[in-house]
Image (tube, rainbow, N blue to C red; front, top):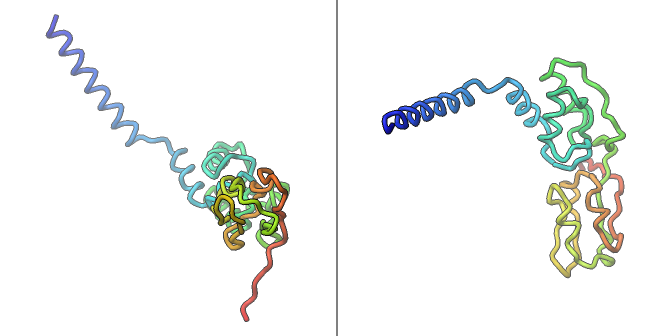
Length: 170
């Protein structure tokens, strides 16, 4: 009886090891495609594409559930890169998910009206808002993706989106 249990245990360990090895070495190609798509996305986790982050959007693109043109922070450059990767034709940015970088919006905080609640800081997926509890906050415009996620949590409505000002070299 003890010999049978020992043999079964060794057989289970050997099969478990074999399955573990196979899961690493024989990983489906779809995971690699998802990783490649995810690497091209800007990693802002803004949700403008209607997915909760860049990885879920990459998975949806790889499975054919989502088009490649729903990422405003990535803009036309990311669309072209995704089209090249997936051997598809590039599509114009779907502006129903946000504006193009050329028309990009940026959050601005009416600093005197800010009560320092930090709710906008917690909502910002790219850490573009600076401030501390009880002190006014400000937006780092170059980091802001214009995703609007900071607007709803603000209890005093002191955050507005304004067109990003294009800087020209002097």
